[in-house]
Image (cartoon, rainbow, N blue to C red; front, top):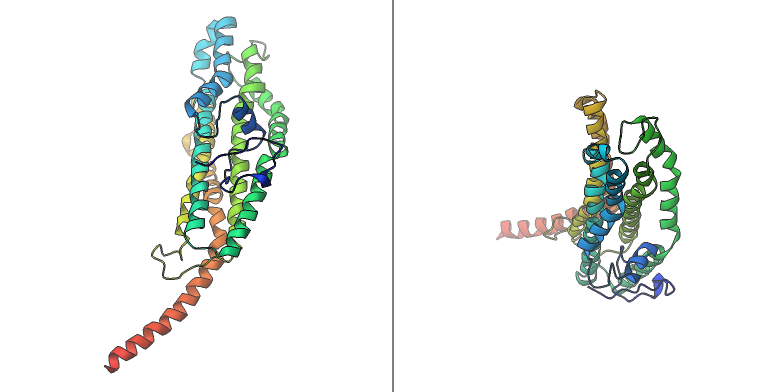
Length: 318
C-alpha cells in the first residue's frame, strides 16, 4: 500500500503518484490519522469499530442502566437502534476498505494493462489529482453534517410517535438516552453513510471521465468486453453501503410489522423500488462505457467479418 499525505495544507494535487485513495483524505480521515486511529499503513478496523460502538451505542446502554433500569429490555430489543449502531455502522467502516481496495485495484490495472497510451495516462493522473482535491476538501463533509442535523426535527418527531421506553418518558419527552440517540448516535450512522455516498460519487466521476478517454479497446479480448471487463468489479465497492442501508430500512419494516399491524406484502413495492435504486447506484456508472463498447462491437463485426470471409473463400478455393 502506498504512502499517504495526511497534511491538509499540502492539497490533493501535491500527493504522491500512487495516492489514488478515495478514503484516506478529508477532515474526518485527518482527525483519525492525527490520533493514530487510522495510520497510513493499516486500517485498524477492530479499533475503529469498537470506538464507533463506544460512541454511538454504549452511552445509550449506560444512561438507561443508570437512570431508567426498567427500560433496559426495551433498549436491548429495539432492533432499529441496534441495527444501525451494531450492524450498519461496522459494515459502513468495513465498506471503506472494500471501496478503497476496488478503486486502487482498478486504477492500478489501468496503468498496467495498456488500455491507455502515454497521453491517456497523463489525463488519468489529472483526473485522479482532481479527485484528491475534492476528497481533501472540508466542504463535502461539512455539508453532510449540516444535512444530518437539518433532519433532527424529523428524528425527534419520530421518537415522539413511537413507544420507546428507553428514549421517551411517560409524558412523551425525550430522556437523556433519547436525546443522545437523536443528536449523537444518529450523527455517527448518518455521517458514515453520507460519507460513503460522497466517496462513491467521486468514484462515479472517475468512471465517467475514464469513459471519455481514448481507451485502446480490442473487440476480440477474451473478457468479451473489449478489455474493460475488470470494471465489473466496481459495483462491489458500494455493496457494503447498500447492505447497511437495507439493514436500517429492514429494521423499520420489522417494527411496523410487529407493532403497527403491517404485513410483509405491504412493503412489496418499496422492496422493488429499493432493489431498482441499488442496481442503478451500483451498476449505473458502467453505462458510461456502453457507447464505446457498442462502437467497438460494430467495428469488430465488420473488420473480423471481412477477415473471416476472405479466409473462408481462400479455404474453399483450395
